[in-house]
Amino acid sequence: MTYQNILSEVKDQILYLTINREQKLNALNKATLAELADAVAFAGQSDAVRGVLLTGAGEKAFVAGADISEFSGYNAEQGEALARNGQDNVFNAIENCPKPVVAAINGFALGGGLELAMACHIRIAADNAKLGLPETSLGLIPGYGGTQRLSLLVGRGRALEMIATADMISAERAEKMGLVNTVVPQAELIAAAENILNKIKLRAPLAVAAAIKAVNAAFASEVNGFDVEIQEFGKCFNTQDFKEGTTAFLEKRKPAFSNK
Image (tube, helix red, strand yellow):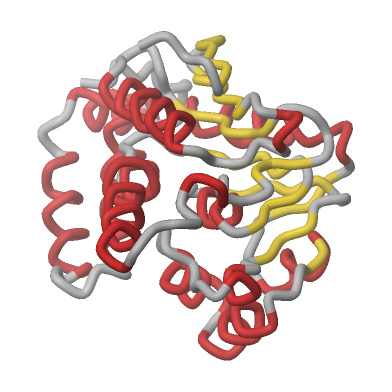
């Protein structure tokens, strides 16, 4: 698939994805979502990718929201389909990606932009970033998992406050609330995200994927997270990486994992 709205590059086993609609503050339209879905699917399947760094072009916006002009005339059925397709193909796909996805929030992360960041496994924000879910000011609510993921990250009261008031918050407050992992100066943002991914690259890839699955299961009502953890823990024992990791530990050397 040839991308028109995102930039994609694999470098040192990291897939760099940049939403490249700077003049539109990187707003999400249907075409951009389709490209993101394709890129995330590639990341999950490619042995050349060990992690994903997701950011927005420029210094103003990570993603400043969805492209409202595309759905302003929708009815209820069309609106539900929009939300369901987006969640299934992009937001849930990112959350369930077996490769760690780090959001480098370089500016405004509003509406669908904040929902995109929340679907990522780890969030690093520039100190100038502003975050919010302003949908109620448009007569809507978040439709790409925002009500659910924000509640899980910051608690019901803070989530309802942010959604009902439609207020933006600073990166500093977002860090205090647990919405982002770390805040760094804008100039250090990409390096900070790379630093996390480079640390993860030193660990066993299959174990990292198992950890993502088990942690996600803690918030999935249809499964028992403890059972998922036990099953994934057991599966690790059949991997070559487990044998390499334990052997390297006993031999007091660094492991050389093979993703097998």
